[in-house]
Amino acid sequence: MSVPASAATQTRVHRVTTVADALDALTALDSVPWVGLDTETRKAGEGTKRYQPGLDPYLSRIRLLQLGTATDAYVLDTTQVDPTAWMWWLKDNVRKLVGQNARFDLALLQQEGLFIPRAWDTYLADRMLRPDERGGSSLEDLAKRYLGLRLDKTLQASDWGRELTDAQWEYAGQDVTVLPRLRAVLEERIKRLGMLDVARIEFEAIPAFAMLARTGFVLDQERWKALWDQAEADLAGVERQLLKALPSGVRQGVLFGAQPVGVNLKSPDQVRDALARLGIEVESTDEHHLKALAHPVAEMLLKHRELATRLKMFYRPMPGFVHPLTGRVHSEYWQLGAASGRTTSSNPNLQQIPREAEVRGCFGVAPWNVLVVADYSQIELRLVAEQSEDPRMIEAFQKGADIHRQTAALVTGKDPEAVTKAERQMAKAVNFGIVYGMGAEGLVAYAHDAYGVSMSQADAERFRKRYFEAYRGVQTWHHRQLWRAKKYGGVRTLAGRWRPLPEPGVTRAANSPTQGSGADILKLALSGISQAAWDRGWGLICEVHDEISLEVPADEAEEAKPVLSAAMVEAGRRYLKTVPVEAEAHVGTTWADK
Image (cartoon, rainbow, N blue to C red; front, top):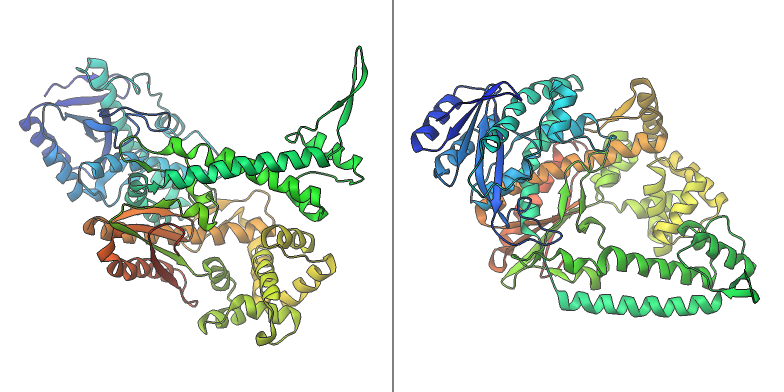
């Protein structure tokens, strides 16, 4: 075991190339409180634009497995030493492990058949401390920000499949020794902000996100291509109708004078000018203003934009997201993608896939498997009830009442049995709009845009007044949240997640802790189900804010349903003490079957 000194970090890098070296390293690591974990990978398959060797668990294999303290790095070459003993040591010492973006390393280990149930993650810790600041969370950034160290990352993308150079050995040891030192600094800051429980939630959810990235959906490419072709045809048809309906502009030609010019439908200015020539004056051509026009041309413009957006965001790029080895679509989940604590997804963004059955019906599982999907029932309104301590709202949930029907009755003055379907739809807009602090004007726009409900300014003002008369605790909670945000500079979730709000308003002061609490609960549920799923050979396939999907063998569906529902309910009960939690599971063969 050679031990050269690393000039970059003033630590020793131990090359583990024999079984004796490997055992000596584990003996040394047994006595330390925290151990950094890192990997370097070699190419194991041909990549695509989306999936690249070195970044994808299916196209990569572990070449180097690195463990380290603040002073010593132990770098095991898997081409010379079987890493099995080290892997089982990792499983027995999960409370000691520190990684940077550990989801990647845990996904690689899962690919090797090892499930690591948690890891202290410096990347996630930094995102917790800086929720509204984007970027700057690489290990190089963190070392400079928190330790004043400059790391040389020039060898990060080098070829790790060949015979290693001295520089590569040194580079492999450099990062892993920084991690325990970073953890000490970051944990102290997290502790000062009262977020140790939140950090635990995040760290224990990492293996679930590794599973989500690895499992992926089966895409029915034939059905998808049919949707794509139909959207292209529909877009062309709407475009022809619009160009006939919208009067052309003119431009001055050098030789021939005024010439007609067709409208560029992608140009807001040209569209606005064309509408003006039809006698339709609009301040903006955004979705809200076009919906308010209630004019056939405006409806065609909205349809054109919807089709163009779907083609650009979903239909055209989706086939490029099919993995060359698995044949599945694997989304990238960003565990702290939103400042509230919510996750986001990308490449592709499965959380924004249109909900229509014809679209979601293209996403499925292997022929011998089924999809088990569970979602929380009205989790955000339940969280509002819990936080606001409003007795009428709490009672409604405790009795299993239809909260939207109850609200419709309260704001219209009707008996609940007399509430119409349209009035219940209106109440949805009122419930979700007002609890997040919308004024009358905002409520009018929200009701129209999100629920297709027409509401006058006078109606909105009357509904707001009656809503707060009915749910006085919600209004008191709004005032309390705004006061706290101004006094302390931010707000917290029920779990204690802190978000700074330098310029708070009622909407952000109410919205952030509610959505953030929902995210905390969902991550608890994910960590609760991930071990059970791994043990049974089930796949975590997707999560969308209040929904979790599993892929299981068809004959195990009835076993999976209560396991998934129970994990979600148990997670919700951690923070919802007075309001009941409901999560119902459904079985289907595609994402549309729920």
